[in-house]
Amino acid sequence: MKLLVVEDNERVSAALQAALIQQGVEAVCATTGKAAVDLLERIRPDAVLLDLGLPDCDGFTLCSTIRAASPVPILVTSARADHGSCVRGLDLGADDYLVKPYNLAEVLARVRAVIRRRRFAEPPLAEAPPGDLVLAGPVRIDLREHAVLVNGSPTELSEDEFGILVALARRPDETLGADQLVDEILRARRTTVQATLPRSIAALRERIGVPYMLEAVEGVGYRLSVTGRA
Image (cartoon, rainbow, N blue to C red; front, side):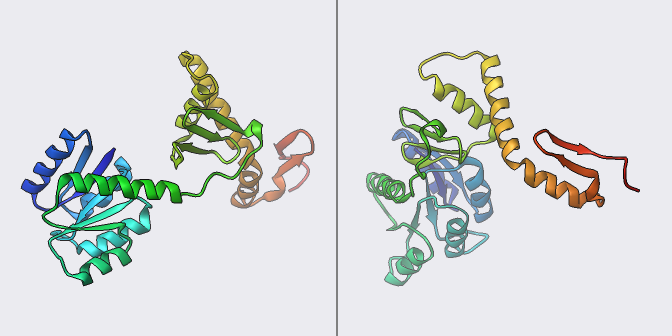
């Protein structure tokens, strides 16, 4: 499990990180709102522990910003024990609200609980024809939609990563050579390009300013005609 810990007090942050690591949790810390937003996309945490007292922005605003950018579970941690702060945090997108000081075991239990709830709430992939699905253990790949679920959770992959995963998932428990993986990556790219080619051709016609030059040859493909029109 990977947590993004947003805590402005570096001493508290370091102690919390060390305690989490001892529990087998990968903890990445940010002491400002800006650093938290930057890390959110880079590390893709399983959950965020968000302290409201930050030096560069309001914690409630950051909570709203994170929720707008990602469905990642957010657990607000604060010394503010009033009901108003708790309600405001939850209304802005937090999944839970913990009052400091808190017990680490309880924090981890709450993190696991919100992650479970999020995963159950994720909509499943639409059913695809059998030939468009690749299943391997907890991995489910929809080739038509270019979508991946791992243990029921959507996973974003680059084109190359997607191609590698498809190759390995089609031959589970087998060892594939680098050449085989490269071939699968190229095949995945070719499928993507073929699907978007008509849109790309239409856009290119508009961009070059002489759309009649880019001709479709039925059953064959396309050509750039430089004769026949002035």
